[in-house]
Image (cartoon, rainbow, N blue to C red; front, side, top):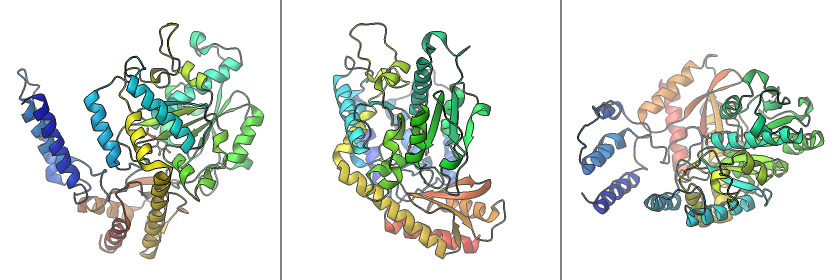
Amino acid sequence: MDELSLIRDADSRAAAYLGGVAGRRVFPDQSALDGLSAFAEPLPYRGRPAEETLAMLDGVGGPATVTSNGPRYFGFVIGAALPVAAAAERLMLAWDQCASSYDNSPVAAVLERQAGDWLLEALDLPREAAVGFGTSATACGLACLAAARRSLLARKGWDFDRQGLAGAPPIRVVVSETVHITVRKALRVLGFGLDNLIIAPTDEFGRIDPDRLPPLDDSTILCLQAGEVNMGEFDPFIPLIRAARVAGAWVHVDGAFGLWARLSSDAMRLTAGVEGADSWTTDGHKWLNTPYDGAIAICRDGHALAAAMNSDAAYATADPFAQKNLTLEFSRRARGIPIWAALRTLGVEGISAMVDRHRALARRLADGLRATGFEVLNRVVLNQVLIRVAGDTDDGTHLARIRKAAEASGEIWFGPTVWRGRPAARLSVSSWRTGEAEIDHAIAVLAHLRETV
Ligand SMILES: *Cc1c(COP(=O)(O)O)cnc(C)c1O
């Protein structure tokens, strides 16, 4: 098969998949999972025909996908892919740009710069900040935290790039009791040591309690959250960032999905003051509904991020703000292009409508579940609904059976979690495809399973 026939074949298979995405099982059935053993082939010495490889991928792989791109998937905060973002991504793949710098791809550099400017405006963050498009909030957070440490050390006269960590002035890190596991990972990889993290106690909603904030100083990185993953709550940014400013600490905000509440008509108040931080991360691939993967690192002092992530040879003409100098990646795909396409097509109004719609759907889900004998553990200020079964055992055996049965039904999928040391389950509303019908269906499925399993 020639190149264009093969690409057309892939496009038509992709279209067939997407055409059926609303009706597909959400989690693959056992026969589809068993079918994956067909991939356990010996590495061919003589290559196989391209069309056969594609047919196998579609025929064996397709049925074993999790339909997280569909309307009845409530796991984590995964989000579907907006049509325009998915379509722009396909075009970008045909271009196959290495989007490291303007020289490698002028179009990628221009579009990512534009998308970065739009993001700062949409999220109402300092317009002078640098914006890097990385793989994930994990990687973007790591980049921001590296910039934070490097900057705090520089203020102490320590050249981290040359001198490294041995003998460096100590940097303290304060994180929330409910800090996301990937922020802990980034800190661990950066060498802070999990045992050295200073834990800030939280209130009943999982927000840092400003009255019990550990002491801060000018050698402290304070990690805050916009959108805690279970409760969907926000740290009280105004008093916390004020305390950090007074102390000279660096504030980093993990806003993987919650930062998009900046565009919600009434949830925006939950993010008040967040613009005063030093760095922020958010994802495209979660609540903005752009395809996997694409995330955003934002740093008020652009030079701090550009210096920490710098990968230039010492060329006089190098652009310090080229994407290869703002993210962990050097060679990279143009992740900002589907994000640009989503921002342009939704506009501020479209994003805020999506965020508000998901919040209303999450409240509808919570009300419906409460009415059928589930305990809703959170206030549902955002798009997360955290549940237990009323009267369940401490280890949540009934809930676990319900979750497994829901998965086996193929009707809906949602994940397990632990809240305050006890098992719970979490449903997240974050797909543009999800509407009231899917919410009501999820309530009905769960009500039925609660009675029968
Ligand atoms: C998902 C998530 C992350 C990590 O984001 P990735 O893009 O998956 O790396 C960090 N923090 C929070 C609150 C999240 O929900």
